[in-house]
Length: 219
Image 1 (cartoon, rainbow, N blue to C red):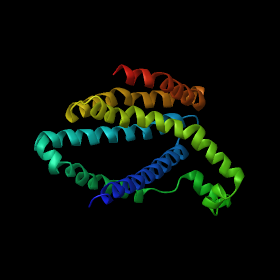
Image 2 (cartoon, rainbow, N blue to C red; image 1 turned 135 degrees about the vertical axis):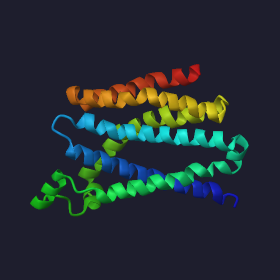
Image 3 (cartoon, rainbow, N blue to C red; image 1 turned 90 degrees about the horizontal axis):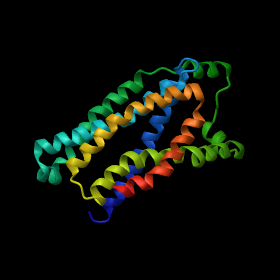
Image 4 (cartoon, helix red, strand yellow; image 1 turned 60 degrees about the vertical axis):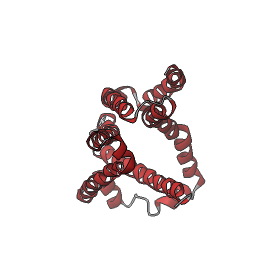
């Protein structure tokens, strides 16, 4: 279908990103509101591991599919299999979502009448609140997003497209690195309960800023 193919792909990936961002933010808030006092960092760190483990699981499925159908068949039609398999995970996630109840913190706010009646207009329609959201987005969350996606998704692209490493080997290397690095989320999440969130977040962004270019250059 010509130029429509990449346009539709980009639109779908944007929608996928919005959905993932909403689910991740909602899950982190839900877990944080259920966490014991002084343990939010540790409990919510498990949410971050699910993102990495999800990527790891997808790489396992891709590697398994490549092995079963062969590289030629995978390039021709086999790449559709992982997408079809993901429907099962979608069903599980919807079922989990339907089983959840509101957190005690939200129930208390609702009973007291202190929850927002119009969250979108209050968050973005009032400059005082919108300013805080923009500062959080561009001053904090965006930097973390660059660090995470560069370290995990761009690394795979870099191995395959820049270094010309085979797809099977590149996926295997990223899978190994994810296994090694996943424990760090839990460790530093727990550490943030002791020393605070800012030192952990800022140190992570600083280390990435200082090391990413030399590391990719060395490869």
